[in-house]
Image (cartoon, rainbow, N blue to C red):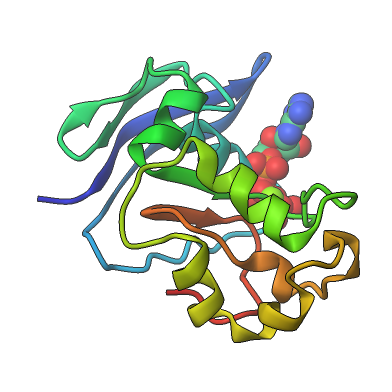
Length: 158
Ligand SMILES: Nc1ncnc2c1ncn2[C@@H]1O[C@H](COP(=O)(O)OP(=O)(O)OP(=O)(O)O)[C@@H](O)[C@H]1O
Ligand SMILES: [Mg+2]
């Protein structure tokens, strides 16, 4: 069973249809790259999966449950997270504080602060430093079961 299924999804910006009848399925442990021209609708699709943009048609199914109408904060708890483009960290908080904020409401599982530091050892010396000091790659770490990167990560993702 796929962990994430998108079925014939439509997402609009006002009158503009930005995502039209998109279907995809991702199995647990699988990495799926979504490739398309500028303006093709990649960001809009990922925002819809994360719950930040309401679709006008179709379904999003996560672990067998229809989450199309589930609010974004509950999707985070279920294990879905969007890593947005433009390094949207809390720059005034430390690396540690950013990880703790991200983990606070997320699904408990393999990923925790320790396993993130194991996966991204480059963060260890920066742990108590402000996130504003991170490079683009360092800023791409995270701790979620299904993670969407809007723009490819420059650090290795697991
Ligand atoms: N906030 C918005 N309001 C109105 N139209 C938007 C908005 N955001 C995106 N669009 C339009 O929706 C369409 C899809 O845009 P989207 O940003 O999803 O594409 P993208 O594939 O992520 O592009 P890029 O490769 O440039 O990041 C485009 O026609 C874009 O102009
Ligand atoms: Mg985009």
